Every structure is written in C-alpha cells, then in structure tokens.
Amino acid sequence: EVQLVESGGGLIQPGGSLRLSCAVSGFTISSNYMNWVRQAPGKGLEWVSVIYSGGDTYYADSVKGRFTISRDISKNTLYLQMNSLRAEDTAVYYCARYVWGSRNWYFDLWGRGTLVTVSS
Amino acid sequence: EIVLTQSPGTLSLSPGERATLSCRASQSVSSSYLAWYQQKPGQAPRLLIYGASSRATGISDRFSGSGSGTDFTLTISRLEPEDFAVYYCQQYGYSRWTFGQGTKVEIK
Image 1 (tube, one colour):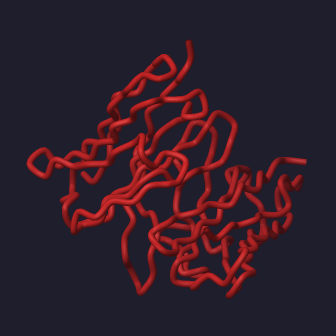
Image 2 (cartoon, chains in turn red, brown; image 1 turned 180 degrees about the horizontal axis):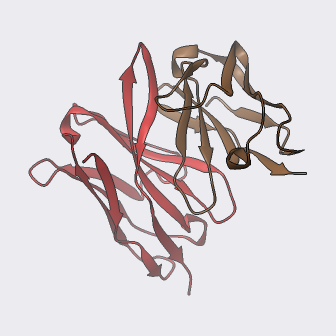
Image 3 (tube, chains in turn cyan, green; image 1 turned 90 degrees about the vertical axis):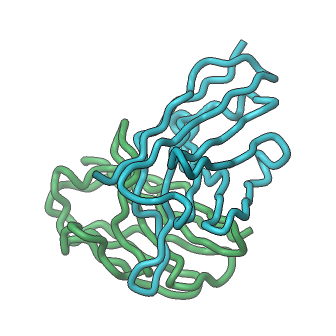
C-alpha cells in the first residue's frame, strides 16, 4: 500500500529543536520530489521544504537556516530537523509527494500530518 | 515569489447550486504547474484538479477547472453535501511552491 506516515510532533518550548519523520511505503523516496507542507491552526497551507530526487534541497524563507530536510534511503524515510523553533512554527506538518504525470506537476500523496506546538 | 489570491474567502451556497472559485496569480503561471485541492476538517488536502483543468483519478465530473496565465477558476457544477470544504489553488515556480489562502464553501 502506498502511504506516508508522519511522526515526531509534540509540544516544544521556543528555541527548542524537534525532528519530524515521514515513513514511506509503496514507492522509493529517492526517485521522487518529497516535501514538507505545514498548516497553522485555522490557517491555510504553507510549503516548507523539498528534497529533489537528486538530493538538492530548498526551503521557504520563513524556515531557511533553521530547518533541514533530509532522507534515509535505506529506511525510505524523510526527515525535517527543526531548530530554533518559534511560536509561529506551530502547525500540522504534512509530508507530501510532488510528481510529474500527464505532462503536469502536482502533489498526489499526502500523509495525515503531525502536530507541532511551540509554547512555553 | 508568485502570490496566489483566492476569492471569495467564503462562499455560502445551498446543495444543488453552482460554485465558482477564483485564483489569481501575481504573475503568469504555467498551467502545467497549477493545481486545486480540497481539504475537509481534520484531513489532509486531496488533489482535485491538475494542469489547471484535468481531473484527478476518482474525482467527480461535477468538478472542473479552467483558466490560464494569471486567472484560474474551479467550478463545482451542483454542490453535493460532501463538497462543503475548503479549496486551495497551488502553483510551482523557481523551486518554490505557493498556495492560495483558500476558499471555504459552506452550507447556506
């Protein structure tokens, strides 16, 4: 079965660190563009980061220098290391696959998300 | 960064009515990179439309997308109870992805 399962969220104090994981089954992450997208409570979707199949990484300006995306191909797992966390990082974090199909690009698979709450 | 502005913010309609949702980009977007998603409370987004006008697998033909350049539209021809949700447009460009702020379609 093709699925993405996030974990690692929780309550963390401002300035703290947290690592999110996204366990993938049904396809190989190294052949895909894997992303993190977040959603603050009651707000819209915000793209956070991507790791391309070739390993290049990109970040939203709001997290650049604080968050690091990575992958473990042997475990078929995506990660998001989050440092220097701020209250505004509070959100549900989704893992999502971005694919090419029928000459178009789109997010076709999403996990259920993991909630990160940054509060003292 | 390309900014997507969706309107209206909220659409109050009755089942059976037609819904027209707008997504306007701050600069031209390739249709190949324009998609629409539906999100219900407590759920992850679900792909509805890709390539601005192609329905994703399993999506009802009540849903249709159109537009090009900077103006895109999602139309729901006859609202069913399960269609009341929040809808987002999304685009990709220069290794950045952006979403519109969403349109909530609520029961009138």
